[in-house]
Image (tube, rainbow, N blue to C red; front, side):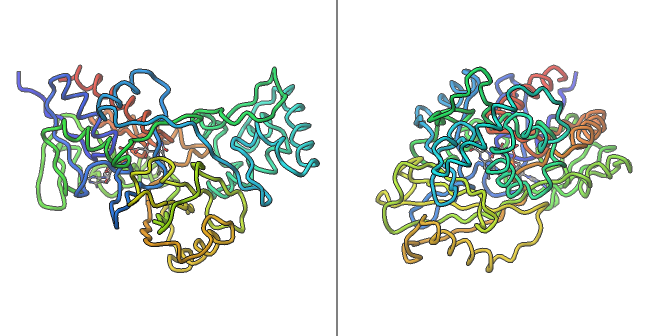
Length: 429
Ligand SMILES: Cc1cc2nc3c(=O)[nH]c(=O)nc-3n(C[C@H](O)[C@H](O)[C@H](O)COP(=O)(O)OP(=O)(O)OC[C@H]3O[C@@H](n4cnc5c(N)ncnc54)[C@H](O)[C@@H]3O)c2cc1C
């Protein structure tokens, strides 16, 4: 019997991991990537002696096997960190997460409001129709109005009543309803500890995966997928036939790529919403702020929602242990930004919020626009993605990954999904 041809589109962590796991099962695959480097969102930018990621890319492990897997790929080039992150709140740095550390706020009225709301919420079993009501039912008015609402409105750029109740639940620390003493519980949540490469930035993970893949073709941008002919056509003129296709290309792009979509799938694809990030990576000519990993900014008046410090992930990310940092701001669906204006506002806010003391400290700036950064799980999103996937899978196409599967997934989640897809596909060949 003729062997089936498996083609993977996109060489981010999902595509690379799928190719890796299929290879382990002796299934031969070819992977195609539009960029000149593999890694997708897990690439790093090397410039002026600095190594920048596409903002903080830290490894969190819910499974032992993924931790062992990543560690073996990176050959112990991995360091464990205990998270030290804060919320900039009325000029004070409140430890993150807010909901377990608000007792440290200097304004006692706010502390009382948060505590009262939390105690009231602990006895509530109300159903939640949106993220807005879910947060209110779990945490109460004080915590929502002081942090969860302003921060999430600023990040997500859509009304919180439009966001699905569980859209970000896995990333939010839940209160312990049996113990509401609430103070000083800094190390809680999915990212209370994390791992990061000792050297080379997050890209070292993507590079280690890529080394294991024999048929990886870079600079191959998919222009068309003909689902009748089962053929992928690339911008450089190459055409490739497939029996099974694994794609990690962002779903909205498929509207212009896939030939033969029906009207209902087209309209589902058009309705998807996502966040893009304007990212400023900055290298300093001095040592950076010690110990802090990142800071959240819920204020509307501050242009970024988060600032992080690369040098506290690894001192190897800057020349002679110089500091480096990132500041992120979000916009909807790749909307145009006034780059020069935003850049100026962000720099001046970095000074005003004392992240840097003077603009002269900045020795190098590398900004970029991440078009697809966060898929938005708005209320009808799950149903739409299900319909899209059903249509595609009937045509032997598996769409997966952060934007192929339209899932707010971490690096670890991508590895897990890729392994599942590899198992499923290897049964078909
Ligand atoms: C700002 C930010 C911070 C994050 N922080 C963390 C973190 O701290 N920890 C964590 O675990 N996760 C984090 N993540 C999530 C993590 O980056 C993703 O889950 C993961 O990298 C997604 O991998 P992927 O392969 O699914 O997608 P991608 O990395 O997007 O890969 C898709 C690939 O497809 C390629 N492609 C697209 N179109 C085409 C085309 N037409 N032809 C050919 N190739 C194409 C792209 O170039 C890309 O290489 C973060 C994400 C963002 C945006």
